[in-house]
Image (cartoon, rainbow, N blue to C red):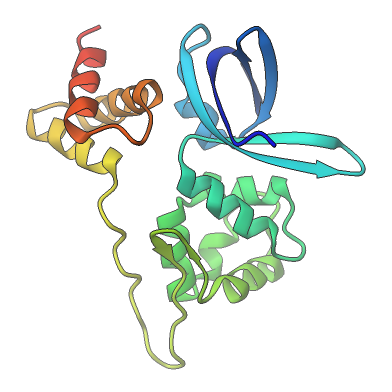
Length: 205
């Protein structure tokens, strides 16, 4: 079972990428959000992998830049009627934290913005995610007649690093791109100070 890939990006196509790990090329299916944050072909990337098998397609790898996205994906596809394509579509329009907020507010319209997710399926997703959690992200149900805002997720390593760069006067779009590249190089277990240094190096290229 493959859980993580660290290798060189060879190709990025619609819906998938090719990662070379020690001379072996892995075709990984990804959402548009993930593909848009991958480094250019020739650079290294780390992808968290969900390995699925179906009778029709055989083995298939789904890749994510963060563990929380992979956990959200596996939780979504456990819901009846939600296949991998629909789950990726949901995560293209909502981060795990935003999805938790939509569930807490019973905001079915937010979930229905995803391609291939109709109103009925959006209702099912919101209903079945209530009370579930993905590590630090919890899908908390809203009490009848009471409007409850979703609790803000704990600051992520990426968010803290971006905030530090913003404090140095870096434009937000450049800060996010540099931090994404730094995390791809260092991994999510890196110290905040190391991520900031690596991001500054990216900005200096």
